[in-house]
Image (cartoon, rainbow, N blue to C red):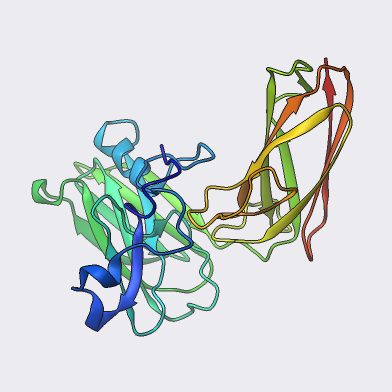
Length: 275
């Protein structure tokens, strides 16, 4: 799991192509604050390397990820303990027409890649591939689908759909009633969603918190490796469209109201009972 400290030993960095071989150019710099080398991020969600290992360990027959398109004139360099900046996402606004790397991890022996119901390519998966094959696809919004086969029979399929613009905030408390004791905590997942209720991937947006009732803010933050500042502040920036809110009881019972707002977004309100 990711952790604070050893800042930037994981992850990757975009640098001018001429600097790619220079170790100094690929070192982490402020504002990196966490190691970013874990399979699980700071808020408990699996990162792309975790999905790839699920295939290796036999927990999943197929996973798909897309490398974030580098800025023009730059290339990605993966750090020693890092992983490529690839995401299970087909939402890359501004990258229309660019050729993106699509990486498929599978226990099958063949993989087919489709975009908007059109077959782009079919590739064999040999022993030397170690369960990983890469495709190139021109980005166009819609539905990206990978289909894995074994011995000519469909094994599994995964789809990545383009998500719409940020529209609202969603709060998902782990339970309706929290513990009122000082040693008890309650977790609330925070997501920015589109009009169809889908989390908006890749989104970094400032959210503001208002908390009333017998609970105190223990932490409000995200998995961002650039999340400087206090996690006890009443604002946080999402990472990949997510944040996490942790409350602690004050020793008194009663209702707690949680409201989270963001510019241009429909606010979200949750009410908990501290017992």
